[in-house]
Length: 258
Image (cartoon, rainbow, N blue to C red; front, side, top):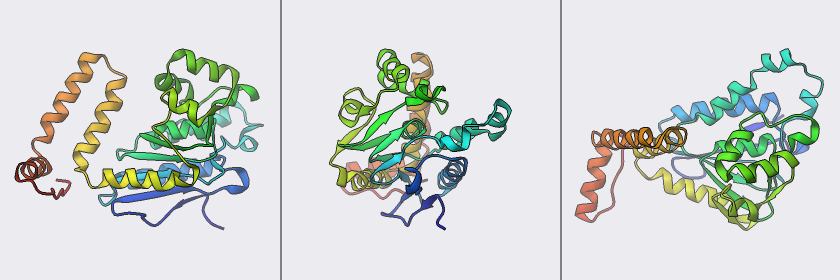
């Protein structure tokens, strides 16, 4: 049988694509899937060839949530031993830009997985949501925190406390997704964005991502200091010299990642 998570051939130079492949369960995130996702993203984060990553599912489901059958009868100690919170940290900690290509359902853990990514491209018929309250629990993969940071307290409260679904149009309007495109174009658009990022200087891309993420949780003065230091560090890179010389000489730059 194929792995539940499949690392596909590279769709473009510098771009890797990870696809969740559990169609019989609408790509529900069981423990095996989470471990494979964490492993693949850790490996790609260290791979010097990979400069951007696309994470996707199927046409019907990005990921329809956690695997309820796997956790329905678990107790507190069992859930603690599984260490799922550590896997979420590993997934969110990938230093490379990660683009979620969301078609169909992105619910519960699927919505949380999309929110760990840096850019979200959604199909017109995609649905997002944190419906955990309807089965007696709450989001546990960052949903209560990332959704509130993305859309604000009052919008987040509405959807977390009712479990209502969010259409792609609503998600875009409230700032939860980056773009909404026709359903057949979701994966292609995500790959195009990844390709655009992959040709840029990777050190600048990495430090830009770090500055945004770290700065969101810091006081403005600390975040601005981080931004300034990150900018200063890049002036020691060969890519900074190449980029600025190419601009002055009116030619296309050749970035080496050094």
